[in-house]
Image (cartoon, rainbow, N blue to C red; front, top):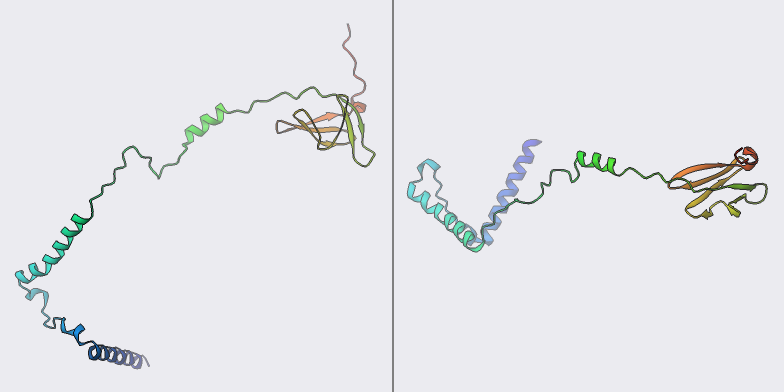
Length: 169
């Protein structure tokens, strides 16, 4: 079976070669059918065959300018943009400033209706409202949760803390 395949491929190749030679004889006219082993070539023949290649190289050099790559003053593309030492010093120098929470007094809570409300600094607020930079996130029986400077703070209910007493003299 394998021999049949090889033979059929050889027959197809020879048939293609024969058809090409019969329709395009000039393609085979230029071929030098005088094959010699490389050892039998004389030095003159070797020089004759190498001369066109050297001329072609010279023509390429005259047409194309020679470009040299100079990487002086450029960044190495294989090194990271930020080194570890810089990130550590940046982390130390960029510590977030902790802002104190503004004075907020919870005066009352209304949590039994449709939506809970609170009275803070004499203003009635609901969840989502803001007092200055402070945003109300939750209102419950226990107190009010607010968001300030990306930190959550819990303000207790006035019933839990009781009436505030002034300092004694």
